[in-house]
Every structure is written in structure tokens, then in C-alpha cells.
Image (cartoon, rainbow, N blue to C red):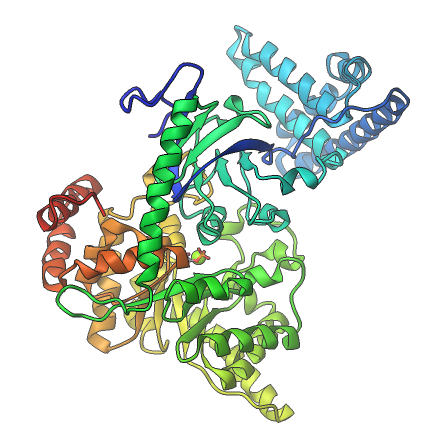
Length: 590
Ligand code: PEP
Ligand code: MG
């Protein structure tokens, strides 16, 4: 478990500095001031108001409070009907808090005395009240702190987070320090201006971390209590390769990290110079390295890094604001397919959740209607996308892949819509071409039945990010459980071996497109199981090429077969590390 600890071991921790540790989520080093983005509740910013605006802020607060009281009354009533009076009482207690002078009068007092916006006053008072509750001797009363947070969250929600800092702040070269920077939040970021991302939430497979890697922005995730150590404009060093953040770094520390950054950049430059060559192992086996792509604009990045096509185009990123029309999608897919020729473009159908398409929110979207399961219900969206894909296929090597299928029946249900799209295009007499249709293996039930799925799917692609999420029961956005998810765990190794065996036996094309594909310790294992196609963040490709070039697949097979028989991740790690050291005593774990 990672905890913020001074790096006394490294000798780098200096007076005045605080060294925080998290998960290395995107490599690279930067030194810059931070801008804080608090997301989990509602982003709350301190905005000073003029004297004549105080009345307006108090009115905003009163309206938010009245709305909260009404919402809680409704929740109380529906809870009473569904679960009885006892449970309903909890909400009545919350409603009573909204009339408590300790909250109401105090918020108004803070607005007046500090001349701040209502959001900031609510937040200030919430912190005061939470501190009071923390000091109570009675355990039951202490637990009521959660209700305060709940009521506070509701108030802030109703205030609508209206007071955000101006976008100019985002334009400066900052490190974004967040409790949770969700992929949708990043839509308003100009990645070229962001120096680094550090956050409390998430592990390396969190989509925001994946985006940071794509944009070559150093990122550290899963830093416990980060925001307790940071405020806006505080300088930090971010070492995304090691998962370290130095808050308020001493001059010497900054100098050391700048030197390290130069060395890393030089190394990257050398690797990039070799991108024209294809990947192959030391014993001459060809390996195909493709790129994962989130946005069409990344195509240059993909080509610059020597990818042999796109193994995963996450199309949902083009549907953030609204689902593009068939024509718009056709143009996007066609351009990409043409740019990648003669390499393939694997288009993944929209991996959206119910709320993304305006349906009612679900309690647990990761386990709700998502991916292909949602698309077969929203067949208009699905078939529009498929038609665009089939039309684009006339212009390049296009393949279509379904996300989140649970097994053969779900795959068949999704493929029905391909047939419908084909019929529609024939009817319209529009040029199109049928494409290989494959399935992502992200749900354990699909991976466990890869042999059955493989009888009808034309290719398989293992999405280890979600596969691990569901295999280990670990929310990929939740840093508290991130350490329960380990790619070297025997459960994942057995799953990978099974799928790879099926594909080898039947000759079915197989790729690995989750983040595990770029994990150095996984290379001998994946190669050893027989995987020969990998798809990853484009930035990871040059380094992967180098690591693959020193592998011998016969040796990798031995290591993989031995590793898969071991009982714990720790033993597997030790086994693979031993192999790495035997191969090259002078190199690091890469
Ligand atoms: C995966 O789940 O491994 C995957 C590649 O898809 P995504 O990260 O987009 O969920
Ligand atoms: Mg996935």
C-alpha cells in the first residue's frame, strides 16, 4: 500500500519539501506550479465578491438550501414508501440540518465577513463542522459526520459550481492537482499547456492516466490525501516515471530532477530515431506493435512513433458532446484508414454508458449498461456507427470490434446489427466493404469462453484494463483498491494463457490492447504465451521495441510456463525479475 512518506532512502528529501508517493501513471518529469481541481464533491473555488454582491451570494445560498430541503423531503417520502419509516428518518435528520443555525447562520456570516462566494462559505463551514464532529467522544455522533458531508455535497451541487476559476488559469503552464480528474473533465484541458497531472484517484489504467500517456504529460495517480498537501500555485516536481511528487522542492532537488529529465529526453530521442524498423525478438520472431488512439488528432503521433496501425480506436472520445452523424463519422474513419494504409485501423464501437446517451443514471455504471450491451439497445446509434465504419472500409484496412461483450450470445446479438447495416447500405446503394468483426475480451465471462467466442469472432483483443477491473473486483478509478489489481496475479496469467492457447490452436488473430501490453515485466510472459500483437499508447512503442528486441521467445515460453504455475504475484514478479537480470545484469527492470 502506498503512503506519503519522506524519501529519506533517496537522500532527496530536503527541509521544507514534502515528498508524496503514488502510482507511476505516465512517464516523464516536470517542474511547475500547481492548479488545484477538486472534483469529487463539486469543484469549489474561492472567489472574492464585492460588498454589493454579498446579498446575491446569500440569496444563492438560501435558494440552494430550499431546493435541498425539497429534494430531501422527496427522498424521505420515497424511502419511507420503499423501505419504511426507520430508513426514511435518516433523510429527515439531514433535512433538519438544513435549518440548523450552526450551518445556516454561519454560512451567511462567512459570506459577509470574508466576502466570498456561497460555495466557498459552505465549504469553509463544512470543514469547521467536520472538525467539531471529529472531536466528539461518542462514536455514534462521530459517524454523523458523513451526513454533514452529504448535506454539504447537496448544497454545493445545487449551487451548481457556478464559480469556477477563469479558463485563463488553465492556459498557464500548470500541473493539475486533483482529487479526481475524470476523463470528461479533461475535455476542457488543452493538453499542450498542461505540464503534469497528479491526483488522489485512480491507477495506471484510469482513462485520465491513459490520456496523459498519450499526450506525453507526466502523471502520478493514487496519491493519498494529495489535496491536503497542495494549494494552487505551490511549485511541485512530478516524476511520472517513479510515481513521486515533491511539493515545494528545494533548489537542489529541482536541479537534480532537471538533469534526470534531460537524460530521459535524450534516451527518448535515441529510441525515436529507430522507429522506422519493425519490432522483432532476438531470435527473429516478428512482433506487431500497434497504437491505441483516443482522438483522431493523434494520428501524427501514432505514425511518428512507428506504430503498425491502430489496434484500438476508442471512438467514444469523438462522442463526448454528442454522437456524430454517419457522415461525420465516415469522414473521420476514412481519413484515419487512409492515413494508416497499409496498416489496419481497428475501430472499437462506442464504449458508452447509459448516461452518456441521456438515459437514467445507474448506481454502478461500470457494472451497468455499457459497451455492446448498451449499443444493442440503442440500435440507432450502433447501426449509424457501423454504416460509417463499413463505408470507410472502402478506403483502407478497417476492422470493427465490440467492447464489453459477455460471451457468444452477446457477440451474436451485436453482430446482427452489422448485418442490418449491410442491408441498409445495399439498399441505399452506397459503396461499402464488409470488415472483420472481433470482440474485446474485457469481461471475465468472455475470456473464459474465448474458445466459443472464437468460433464466430474473426479476431479477439484482450482489454486488460477492464478485464482486471472485473477479474479482481477493483474499480480502476479507485486508488484505495488499486493495489489488489496486479497483472502478475495468477488469475490474470491463467486467463491470458487460456486465451492465447485457444487463439494459437485455432489460428485466430489475437492482440492485447490494455495497458498491460506496455508493461515491461509482462513482455516475456505475453510473448511466452504466444501473443505477437500488442496495441498501446503510441509513446510507449519505441521503448517496447527495444525491450522486445532482447527477448528470446523460446526462453520467454519457459518463463511463462514456470510463472503460471506459481502461487502468488510476488513469486511471479521475483521469477520474471530473475530472468531479466540473467539476461542483462547491467540493465534495470526494463
Ligand atoms: C481495456 O479495457 O483494456 C481497454 C483497452 O479499453 P479501455 O481502456 O478503453 O476501457
Ligand atoms: Mg475497456
